[in-house]
Length: 196
Image (cartoon, rainbow, N blue to C red; front, top):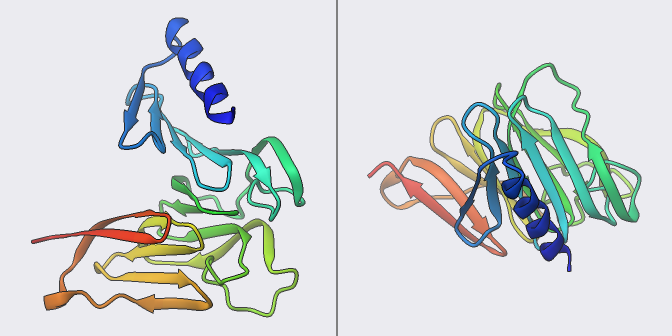
C-alpha cells in the first residue's frame, strides 16, 4: 500500500510538471528533479524512507519503532526534517532496517535509530539501544550504505568498514589490497567496486 502511495505521489508530480523522476535499479533509490533541484530518495526493508534535498535537508517518514525517523519511537512518524549538530551539508542518506544514516560533506557519518546489533557503529553502553537524533558514528568517509542489520562505510583511502552483527568498525580485507571506489548493500550483502 505504502509503495503505491509513493508511486502515486511521484506520478502526480510528473503530471503536474513539478519535476523529472529518474528511477535506478530496483526502485529503492529515486532521484527527483533536475541537476539544480534534485531530491534523492532512499527506501528500505523496514518501511521508513529518507529524502535528501539539493540543499542538504533530510526528511524522514514511515515506521519509527526505533526512532529511525528522528523522533521519539512510535509506530509511525509523519514527515520529519532531521536536525543535525553540524553546519556541514548532508550529501548522502541511506535507510537500513530500523536505522538511518547520513554523510556530510566533511566526511562525518551520522546515524540514528536502532543500534541493537551495533549497526550504527556505536558500541557504547547507551540504553535504550537506539538513538532518536543523529549521532556521529564515523569520519573520513566518502560513501555509506545501510543494510538489514549492518552498515558499511567507505573511507577516503579506499577502505571499507562494516558495523553490525555485534561488531563495530571491522575492516574488510580485499584481495590484492584493492582500493574501493563505491559501495552498495542490499539486505545482508555488500557490493564493492574497486579501482581496477
